[in-house]
Image (cartoon, rainbow, N blue to C red; front, side, top):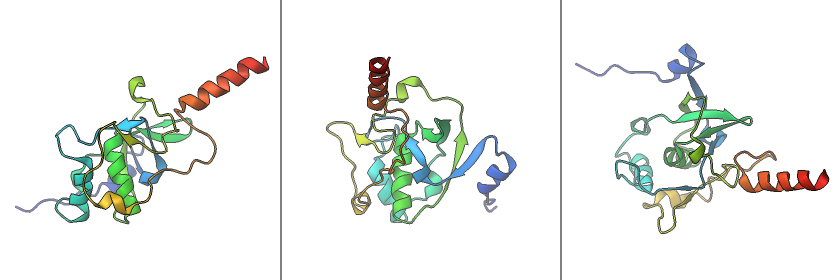
Length: 163
């Protein structure tokens, strides 16, 4: 028996309240830092290399969940988003299907740069080669920021001074 082809785009058409099609560059990180390994112990950079070199497929990466927050799509699935953003910059991925969610744990909302980019935890770095071919995955913010603790504190301080 052969495998039945499944069109994930049909999910968005059939269930627009549950799924959305987005460019990885339209999705913001929720955290400051990420681990260089997935929970399964596979490396984030190695996964990117495996997809770019045909050892696995982008469809092997589980969907990410996204939440609309302050007018922007945010995910707590930061390691997978890191891979998707690199794949987009490398012209291997233009859109992904994401699951809409209504909340992200408060502990995962700690980005200090509005979710435009992430760093690896101290002492960790991406392995592999393909990520080095991408100068940046940072979103160039258009002005408003989300999850930006520094900006929020500054705004709060200014509000207190003005009143």
